Image 1 (tube, rainbow, N blue to C red):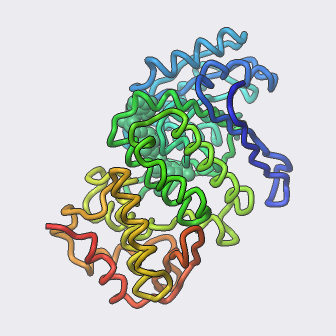
Image 2 (cartoon, protein in one colour):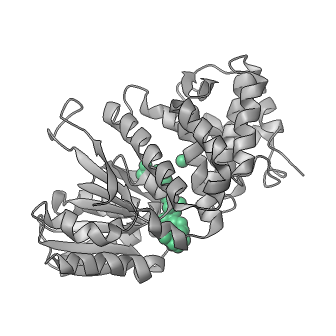
Length: 374
Ligand SMILES: NC(=O)c1ccc[n+]([C@@H]2O[C@H](COP(=O)([O-])OP(=O)(O)OC[C@H]3O[C@@H](n4cnc5c(N)ncnc54)[C@H](O)[C@@H]3O)[C@@H](O)[C@H]2O)c1
Ligand SMILES: [Zn+2]
């Protein structure tokens, strides 16, 4: 296969079952190889779970590939959008899987963005106490982030991703050609997580992003391929070392996210795309780090400029009617808060972050000033 294969190694040091190592295939035209990849594992039957918006052309291409490789194949479709990550939809789809008479040897193949990946992984984790799942991500967010690492789940009225499971896929097949049909706003939003990887782990990658903004914005395949490969590698690096967020390493992926979740919650989910909120969250986090004397003004500017050049928001008017206290209260309830203390993942240079505790709420409020616009 003309792709780069990244190995995510989970060899049993982090809990049973012993070996859940898998390959992440990133390349162009990889969708057409899905059948061969699954058949090579001995898989004879697959159910494709697809976002209704990508049945044509992407899920159809996957179905064709599976059929050509000799697999018996069924298709289940899910309405696009976050609302599908629900108990109702999960219940409907589990019943549908049962109707199809599938057993533990059948693979579920999730084709779509993070919504389908999270839902599909969760369905697979629960059905018959666990069936194999393959992730075929078709959004930038899913290719660089959600399809990798085994976090799956659905939403409750009480909160996002409140019910879920760690369920590592058998493999990830990321075809960057699928991104050609992705709306610009969705594509740009995904770039926030990419900038995040540079900030938290890889100064060289950050510099590469700075040097290649024009090619990235123009979605030149060679640039996008490198960007997805390096991001997937960095996500795999973190997951291998801290699958279940126990050592604190995986928590570094939350850079910008404490602010982002507060912005998303306060403005109502859907006003800001997640990546847009992450971009604003990283602006605030860098400002907070500078206020605390952890990074220089030059570092703040470099991040700000890169986000701007990639078309990501660095200020927003969506917070105009939201009081600082409201944002602080939401941050106080964040999963990453311990004993009521505000904790943030903050950079100390480009390419390295630390978890910082006991931050003065006044400094947090001051960091948000810069992202507010009227
Ligand atoms: N499990 C994790 O570790 C993790 C990490 C990050 C995000 N997530 C979850 O991922 C979800 C967000 O993912 P997302 O941004 O991919 O959203 P999404 O799945 O809703 O996809 C965004 C939109 O793009 C459309 N789409 C998908 N692929 C397309 C394509 N190739 N061409 C055209 N349109 C396409 C979808 O129909 C949808 O309207 C959230 O639910 C979030 O909680 C999970
Ligand atoms: Zn995120």
